Each structure stands twice: as C-alpha cells, then as structure tokens.
Length: 349
Image (cartoon, rainbow, N blue to C red; front, side, top):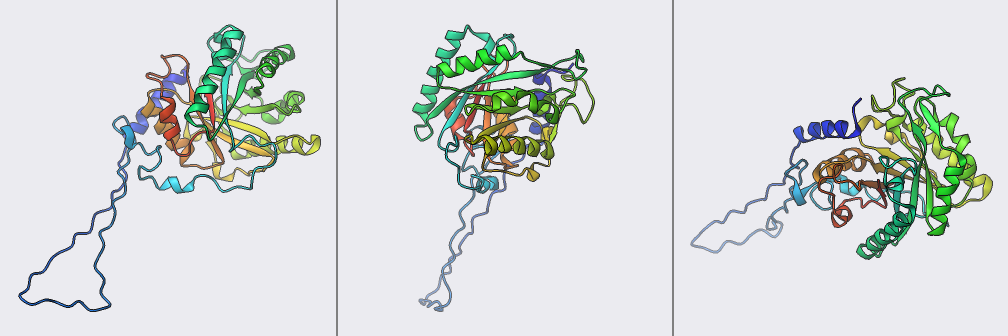
C-alpha cells in the first residue's frame, strides 16, 4: 500500500522535474546619436521608455523566495485572485476571519492532533496557536475549529461492504462539546470509501443542522470511480460531486434559516478534483479548496501552486503537520501568509 507520504513525494519529484522559470521581459535599450549640430525631434516622436522586467519566479527546490506561489513573483495567476463572487451573506466566516482547525480523530494518535494529545492540552495548544495567527495577521482574526474525521475509510469492506466506518454519534457529540467549550466550530469530515456523498450526507445531516457545524470531504478516499481499496490508490471527486455537496448544504441553510456553511475539499493531486472549473458556487456555501499535501516547504508550495492557485474556485486552505517526519522542516506561518491567495483556512494534523 502506498502511503500518502510516498505518493506526495513521488508527485513532488514529477513537479520538480518539470520546473521552469517564469518568462522575463527584456529591457528596451536606447541608442544615442552624436552630431555636430543639435537635432530637433519631430513633435510626434516621444522618447522610448524602457520596459519594466517582470519578477523572475520559479518552482522547485531552488525557488526560495522567488516561488510562484508567493505574491508578486511574476505569476500571471496572481490576477485571478481573489475570486470574484457574490458579497458574503450575514453570518459568513470568510473573508473576514481565518479558520484554524485541529484535525484528526480521538480514537487514533496517528490520524492527527485531535487524538495525539490529552484533550485539555490539545485545546490549550489550539488557543495559543490561534492567538499567534491573529497576532501575525490582525486583519483576519482567527476562528478556532476542530475538524473531526467522522467517517473513516478502511482497507477492508467491513459490515457495510463500503470500505468505510461511521463514527458513533456519542463520539461526534463529545468532540462537539470540546469545540463548544472554546467557542470553536466543528467540521465533520467524510472519507466515503466505496460509498458516495449521496448515500452518506443524509447520515451526517443531523449535525450539519447546527449553525456551528460545517463539512469536509476527502477525494483521496472516494473510490467510486475506480472501485479500488482505499489507501492503495488515490481517489477522486468530480465537480459534479462537489456541486452535489454544495446543493445539499445550501438546501439546509435555506430550509432551516442557518448561517452560510463552509465546505472544505481536500486536494493534493491534479486528478483529486476533476473539472474544477465546473464547480457552481452558491453564496449560502463557502468553498475552501484545501492543499492537503506534506513535505518540504518548496514541495508544498509547488502543490499549492499546481492544484490550488492555478484552478481558482473560491477560498483556499493549507495543511500543517505537527510531526516533523511529515513536514521537514515545517513551513513557517510567515511564509504561509506570503502565499497568494493567502489561505483563510489552516488545518493542523
């Protein structure tokens, strides 16, 4: 079975091999003429102005501060952001705030920070982390959140035959209680395995009816197209699947008079989301395309540029891993804030 790390590094090597520098505009050079007599220029002729060279941006391990994922390094993609959409509805989180979400499942220390620490220590860490992000970017005060894997993909079919396990409602309520104690949001995340969003969203609806509960969906573990076993191949969602989730959430907002929902879509491969240009936005649902990869900072920036920046949808996210073996070295908060677009959803696993 290929791990996410192996797959991410393999993909990163492919990106690095195709690294190119952004084109650089050539400066115009003026020529001087000497004469024994003064020369009067015709009135219609203006002195040529030298062209200003575009910054020289790059991808790959040698890109450094010139990386094209940063703002102002010469990428033509900069002008595509922010995405032009309808004005945010009352109660919207974005773009006024930044969400900082701690991710995982309390039943596993390997799946993320939610299960790695004792509860009170984890929540105190979340508070400190949120305060630091707010200090670095006071224009976007942080809204803390817990991001729970409420449905876990499995390497075996299980009783359902769908290669997925639904978490017990009691566990979801417990994590929701943790979130409420810190005025945090709760995200319920679905790894559907060989099931579908059409089958699974009704199961989680009772939690999504709460105004402070939002949704995450993970294409990596959506295997309906291939019929493969989760973890052995990378799954995918099409724009049609994402549009279904948007419509589902928008209907809940309409029917139950809820504030707008957030939909987080994980992505770290080009085929993780297909036909992204066909995603249909609705002001009742704020869509985050979340860069879910790991590795050295340049590799993560390459992934962000390739899978997030060059296919604009609405808002963007960035994954930070708490273990050094995943992010070596970790990308600094300051470097994350230099990205363009600047991520408004930060997930710590």
